[in-house]
Image (cartoon, rainbow, N blue to C red; front, side, top):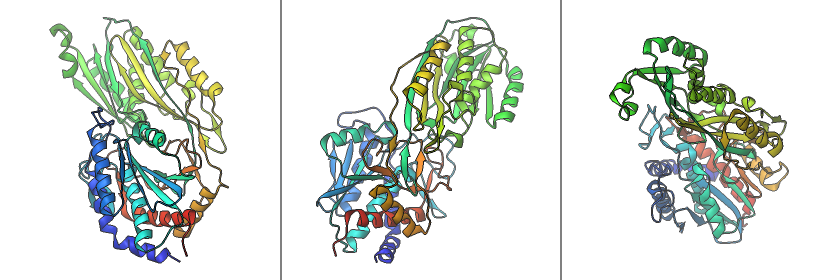
Length: 483
């Protein structure tokens, strides 16, 4: 009944939606050091302020919850549905070619910039779905509450804070995944490990290793400083690695950062080894090419002098072999029919001459549990001589296909797209993880690589308009329409 009118409204407001998205993308809202009144730093607070400005411009009355999150009610009737999106982003990273990360541009129907698809664009799709319903004079029997947070990428403490002050709606969706919807979000295990090293003067040796930005991002770069091997001697090993793994390796004689802290005699014989791979979200590590595990494989292949550091680096490489996306090196490569395979990726690692430590990301299928996963991983670490932080596993999140929420969202997806598809199980954890009767729905397409968390991130404008249309239809079904 309303399908054509809603689509016509969205088409008419296409440019306005694009400008709202670009206004948000211009803000670098990656988490930084907390300041007074800004728990996640200046950028996330600025993004929330801009979100308030946009909502006020459209006639909503947003409330800011101490710069953790903002919300806006649609009609202040009985609350039926929460829509949770986020305005924070992962760090910009390097390798951007189309535009700078926070200078959004529209090219060939795509908006480029950090946060366009994760999650500023989808947040605006939800806003414009509500605007379409309101401006077309369609009255909902129950209320929709839009919640925009500022710490999704670093643990969702924003939403924890928000729901300490507010009760949950009976249903919740998060436009921060793929269509048709996510009904299973795997469990998690994010564990750090470390070891103390005995300094050695024997050459050649690795002086330092550094890689990783965030635990949920597969590292695109990893760097080591080697002492006692010339560039010429390193070249064959690097060429072999490039051929086998598809990474690139850059060798530079000397290491300015390291040399600044060394005595003059020790400055000689240093070579910087930079491995470049491909970044990806840790929930789908197979979509990237992990520069860190490639570097560890390279180090393990070198003819270095025996030392505690070389021994422990080889152990790390065996526990996290390059190309092992499912935890086989740690003995936890589980799989089940409902949720698929466990994924595991080493994403942060640092080493100097006295210590090393790393942090890995594991997305555990439903069949994985404390006994067959967490305890197994920790035993492997202990047997190899590492200590660990003994974190508990995060529980999986599951909403049955038969629920009203899942059935309704699938119906709206089919109505708008004409496609009949099954709900998905993913490794990622969204805002609704742990929220009873909450699912992630849209705005991504599994067939489109939007470079989320990587350089040249983009969102397709038409995909956002279709998403808004699906949301509007679902909002009306779930909340009821006054005749």
